Amino acid sequence: MKINIAIDGPAAAGKSTIAKILAKKLDYTYIDTGAMYRCVAYFALINDVDPRDEDKVCRLLKDIHIDMKGDKIYLNGDDVSKKIRDNAVSMYASSVSQYKDVREFLVFQQRQLASLGGVILDGRDIGTVVLPNAQLKIYQIASIDCRALRRHKENIERGLDSSLEEIKSEIESRDYQDMHRNISPLKKADDAIEIDTSDMTLEEVSQTIYQLALERMNDLC
Image (tube, rainbow, N blue to C red; front, side, top):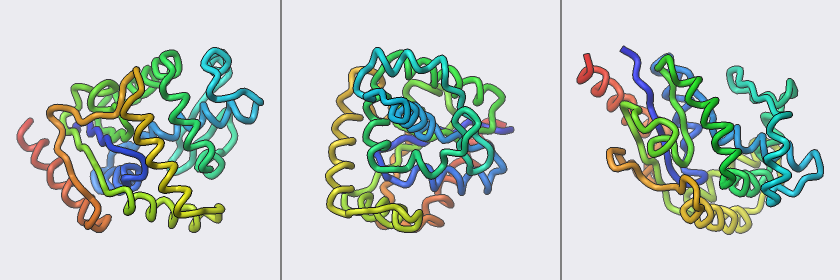
């Protein structure tokens, strides 16, 4: 039996990395929900629309088509996998994620993708809003310093300009925005299992969740 797995948590907690590893271990489909919001923010920016202007951003939704193939993210047919990881796009992704129409537009797509089971989604409100009936919910956290360092290393590996102090400040700002937005704020689902990854390796985290998934599947058989 294949289950659906929801991984929530603050920015740069390593959710996407762990979700990808776990998807390979379980032979599941990984759906990068954060990348979907980044695509909306990026599309607004390249169309000279201020991502903080809710009305104008929402008018763009009819012209947005997002595809995911492997590790690649396509926006209207163009590979934007690297472009949407820019720090400015990350910040604006938090802004557009507060808009009701944007959330409904993307949540509908995410639920459709998860309807057959065997998917892993990560984000801020997967276990609380997108997939409240997910059979396994994880709330993945890490210290601010740890998250900032991880994002800094990721940016360097991608060949992007990066300042550790700026990233730390941006993560702190995004945490506040995500936790205090009016629509679907970041919070731990009542039935989620919290995992602090600050002092854990990727393998330790992925193996921990992998074992939890196997146990949950056995319980449901």
